[in-house]
Length: 148
Image 1: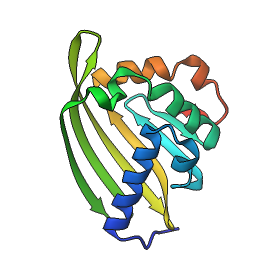
Image 2: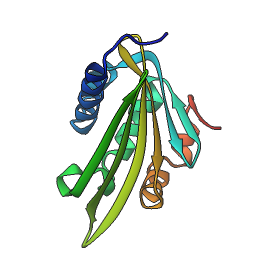
Image 3: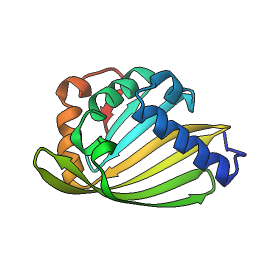
């Protein structure tokens, strides 16, 4: 189903969704999603569909040092809205122990009706090392998780 949301409405939903994820408010984050949401991660071509694997991914990813917003510096984001999608290009540095690392990702959020349908994220090599550690073989064995 296409969306009738305006660009500002889509940006507001993405902002709310992201804030709920950061606050570990899983029910709040889920309220921004359609009933059958999915995430895709690149370049590892990992797709997870449904509430259980999505929440498990949040629980595993968000404690990683690269996603600890309290340590972010040099944070930059460019946003674009087109049709039923929001595109974010984000780069920042973060603390990992005594060192700082640079990171970059691209995220595309798609919408259906008045909710977010999917989040597709392209990770750079720095982030991918943390993502692969968090979303390990146990995660990849979950129902709703697949390589494509």
